[in-house]
Image (cartoon, rainbow, N blue to C red; front, side, top):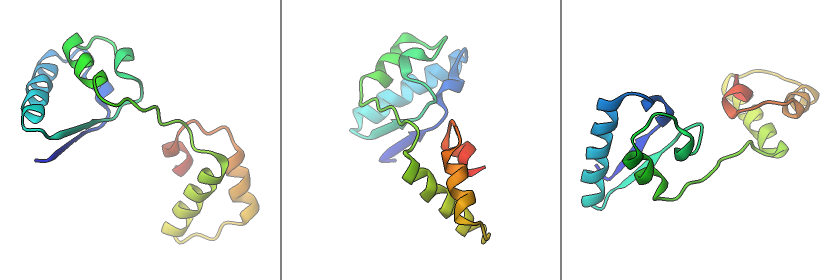
Length: 110
């Protein structure tokens, strides 16, 4: 494995055995000069009840906050979802949806 992608890492909260396994996996991957990409809904330091060594490993790399997309990107996301579902939605409705206070891309797609 050249790349390990871990999503929703916030769910390791309180799961000590899983955290221990992740620490071992991080060590193996780093020793083999492989990449690890972690995704979470919050920065590593804000994830509660997680081993400090695991937080340190996650925070030791590049930490990027992927914020909400700009208006144009929201319109493009909506258009892609509409095209994928083969729907016919008026441009005014797409614009109105893109202007709403959507808090995540998943919510926007839904």
